Amino acid sequence: MVENSMFKSKNQPSDSCGCDMHQVICSDNVTNIYDRYASQQPQCGYSSAGICCTLCTHGPCQITRKASRGVCGATADLMIARNLLSKVSIGTAANVYHAKNNARTLVAIGKGLADYKIKEEDKLRSIASRVGLDNSGPINDVALRFGEFFLGQINSNDYDPLTLVKAFALPQRLAVWEKLDIIPGGPGSELMTSLTKGLTNMDADPIDLMLQALRLGIVNEFVGLFGATTLQEIIIGTAKPYMGMASIGIIDPKFVNLLINGHQPLLATKVMEMAQEEEFIDKAKSIGATGIKFYGCVCEGQTLLNLGSQFEGVYGGPAGNLTQQELILATGAIDVMFFDFNCVLPSLVDVAKQYHTKLISTDKVVRQPDVLRLEYEPDKVKEIAESILNEAIKSYTQRGRINIPLSPPKAMAGFTTESVLEALGGKLDPLVNLIADGSIKGVCAVVGCNTVREGQSGAMTTKLVQELIKKDILIISAGCTTNPLENLGLLRPEASTQAGKRLDGVCESLGVPPVLSYGGCNDIGKIVGTVRAIAKHLSVDIPKLPIAVSAPEFMEPKAVADAFSAVALGMMIYLAPLPPVLGSPLITKLLTEDVETLTGGKVYVELDPIKAAIGIEEYINLKRSQLL
Ligand code: XCC
Image (cartoon, rainbow, N blue to C red; front, side, top):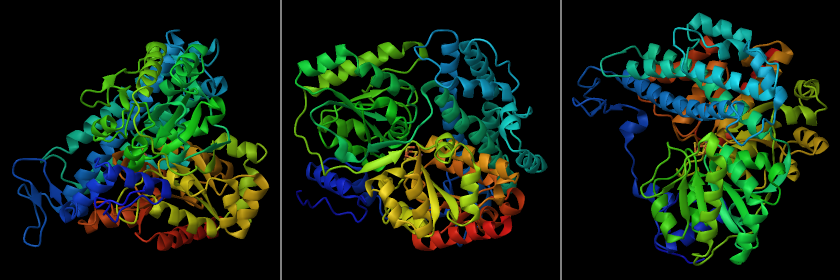
């Protein structure tokens, strides 16, 4: 690969495929996330500590040695609490939006308007009866009833406690939330209240703002993440263990190639289904391609790998995460990239032009100037899918230079509460016994994004995971964090030799890797499902379990909302990089210590992955000693 003077930043991809492609994109003088990060240095210290406010025209204000308050009188505590609540609001809104699209699809299926068949009938009937609906009769009638019920929950008032929360939360959790008065009502209404509280000179009580953030955390889990995962599974199927491939190296230039990006795979599964029809295979062959293939980017790539067994030979695997999005296009071998939700870098329009890729937006919330819009509507999936395939076939003929790095690693994915149970003979007892006898010391979820901050870009995630598995702590991953773990081969069953002896023994006997991928970041909802099942099985509340959560390279508002969900659920969540709260000793202490006395959950921050692994192990050991 060509050395280039632009290839100068210290913050490079942590994997060799990414490094190679970074050199390519730099040699081509094309904008990319690594170089833009370097150009932004040094970044603002006030914002990093959370002590700035741009809400009104008295400002912008910063808290400094000579100014302990903004012009309006807001303290650092208030600025930080208000900013945090605003991030939790954005993140919760986004997850609920995703859930709403799934519920709309259920309604359309129920009315016979959408070209989908319910794949998980039992699951749908079971959740319908949990919320008190009639679950008998034709399955499409149940889909209509549940879909309309779910949309009704989204639009309900914030003074009526949500049925979804009352039906699915553990009774012990409900009691904790009742005491704190944070059992939420409808998401739309709760979000309106939250944003109103965040107005200038409105709610000036940092503690009240943080309680509202916890309330949104509950909405985020029981409407956003639940709707994004469970409703999706009902429509397109539940994941099953599957051995696939990952990394940028999976792209096969002989095929017409489509990159799927986002979080909402309903449309993508339909496009992949149609790509297998003779009509499209013939069209691809007529222009000299071997066939049509799909790859995933960001979380949808991981979610689709989990459904890999349904798309054998069509879905090539997850090519990369957000930090690699531009690098994937720089291969020159992606003919169409279609995206349905975050994360889509705003720079893509320019990058795509350089490498011939045709961009297509498939949801009204993702728009870029001059990008073709074929927006998802449940009753139009077939015609949208057809147009996407035709665009890809057209674009294939426009290719220029191709640059594909190294051979890709294998990756086993497709885990979920059901498949973990299946691997253990259909019962939770074996898992509980393995934890009780120390073969598995505990479980740590490793979720969320990767950032391009120096020392991160996957490096932080992989170091943390390598340390944790050495300590016999089983990893469940979800989100873009899975990508660097795949690139390092940690999702292969053979990777268990890198784990401690006891965990290695468990993985070997079950034929699974020490990192179990649950899919994309929305699939965090499925991780919570597993945790809830274990707690229920043991008849204890969630904070009693030797289970921790970590987001070692968290990046954006959905992750902040997820962090508040974890704290509300009573779990410790480890975060890096530093969340923008350190300018307020009050909020820092509240989130890292005091909240534990309220919900049983807390935030743990540590920038060194080795020390972080020790901290997580100590937490797990403490929970073990209290439980066993
Ligand atoms: Fe975006 Fe989920 Fe984060 Fe990946 S993991 S960088 S949000 S795509 Ni949520």
